Image 1 (tube, one colour):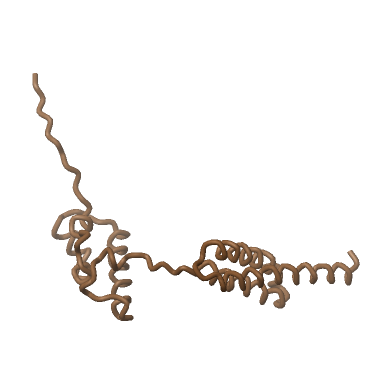
Image 2: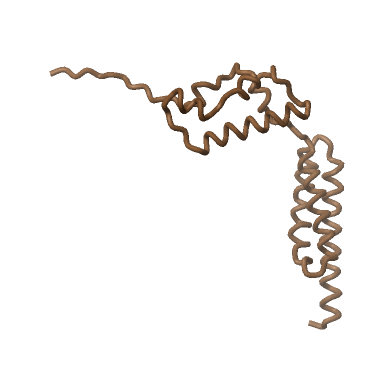
Length: 162
């Protein structure tokens, strides 16, 4: 008795069948996730439909801001913009927030974690960022905040006489 084996190809997701690497931004913006579902007969989860709509919205915002043209390749449109100074920027923001919380009474307990996080991000930024200026400032501000926090704790202990 012989059995015939028929290869069965798994159905492709609807969005993957339509979206290709050579697609332009304009072609991607014209895709309607609900229309894909109706034409292929494959049901898409709401998350997949929402993801396509969200990506289309992000691309439209880039076009409106002049950062992208409708004729650009789709893979170029979703390429990550490499901001080389993110660590330094976040180091400065977080250490600055820690410094401000030092003077905000009830929120002073957030000072030490924020200052440590700012200092660590500053050290990472010095090592990895292209321009380490903000990283150095953030690290110094984090160290200064830690020192001021320790001085404030010592004054508090001396004043209250623990």
